[in-house]
View 1 (cartoon, rainbow over the protein chains, first blue to last red):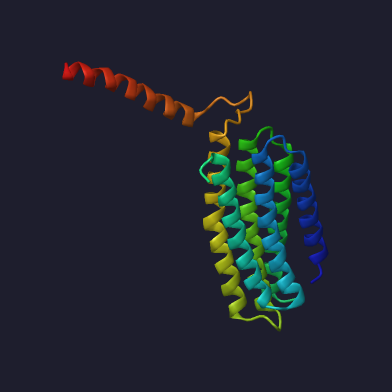
View 2 (spheres, chains in turn orange, red):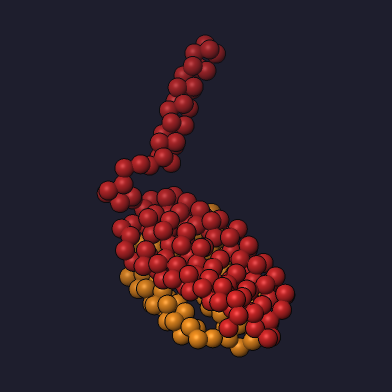
Length: 84
Length: 133
């Protein structure tokens, strides 16, 4: 558990850079790409928290979050394509 | 610290570093297609590193067990399967909604494909009409 501060700092910097793209992005798809990357990063963060708090139930939360984020991104892409 | 913990910690460090690189690519790349390709690839590699690393790391601790590794590998395989699908759907939506390529881009295979298909249809249609006449 020594280096977990380093990992959390790297994840925080990555999330901040993605937030910059979400707020600044010139087109809607830019924002969607940034949100997609942020959901992937959040899944990794949940798994790290499962290890930190020593609870295996958090892994199920991460799996369900990954499934829901995938469905959301697919729905948004379909909407951008004009099919929804 | 035993060997499993050390291996897991190195994998998690690599994974979070690749997360950082993917977000950096999101900032530095010029248009949405380049951003999508660099950030999705390194985010997939980063989540693989973090998930498998956490599974191996938990095996080396006193509370960890085999189900930790199994569950993290299940999440990793799910992300490995679904990240390319969502990237493909997003880029297809971007192209269909008419976002232009960066001015430095030189290859557009999809437009070449569409133009070739259109040309074939234009060539086929008069030939069929001529055959009927």
